[in-house]
Image (tube, rainbow, N blue to C red; front, side, top):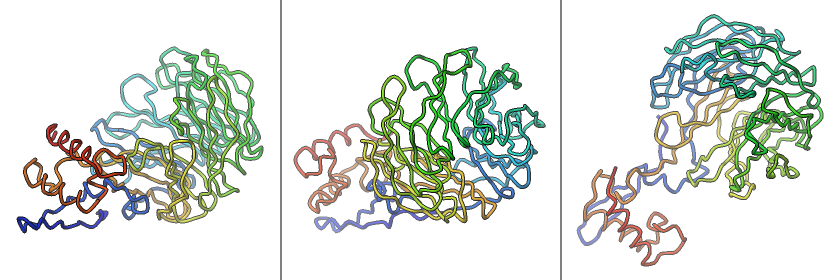
Length: 434
């Protein structure tokens, strides 16, 4: 099990009673250098590429899905709810599976799998049975060397559709879902050179899904504004870093507008393009990551309600974490080991403790690597002695922490130690425990 921060002992001289602060409380400091415990690895197939997370067997616990390029299959790791996973189940895919996405394609309230097959020029659809197993794949044609895939209702009919980045055709395929787990091919739309990844969201506020695509050879991002009928306007392009790969969307500067974060393979950076209202983006800012960044995820990792970045470094041994400042800028990267050549990454609460964890597809070691977050807020902030109830000992512990100018006693979060911290503690105490 991952080790949490070392427990501190507080001596209350008046009673000579030791008060032990629980690890969850100590983790409120959220030291970014100790954000995660040691990685735990799980066997998957050969040359894993992409990874997705979702509840596949409807037990309330997150599960993992990994595409395995060399073994032409998909690994499913069912979660136990505590951040650990069962031994993999494998399901056949097409030739050289790459990108993966999860969604309910046939309206049965069960997640299904869509995976792109690089050598097959098609996508595999595996319909879920609701118990973590899947029906035999169905194949649907797309373009040449498909890479990333995203799911969303592109034409407003209530059924999920798919958009696929076709690397060698410099375009994206639009697959219109019929609502029964099958697709019609509607159209293909031009993007930049050698597209890699794709994401969907309403970027211009018109109620229709739009697409962004990362283009490796043209070093840019294509923006495709959706018309709401499954078609898109001609692309607008925005410069990214060198050889952009995986991308993600999130509000990185807290202005209510979605931004783009993209991993740049050749540049060793993550680029951020801050969104403008109406569906446009500001010039990129770039932040150093590790060696050959291949994928990226956006999540609040340190619990401060500000999005952070986690980057899979495809020719390294680690993922990079960049802590967000709330204005679209980020602190210097911090590295966490996951194994040789991580190429896919997701961020989600894997053990239901309220903190966001990380899982990576590790190409070199044929594994999925899980990093559990140690930054867990106390469910009862005023329970300073960690005994699950609020008593005089919590008041004594607070006094001791306040006198020591410990950050835990800065209850109003203003960086100072004043009467207002006492009032904030009193309010938390009066609110009781869940």
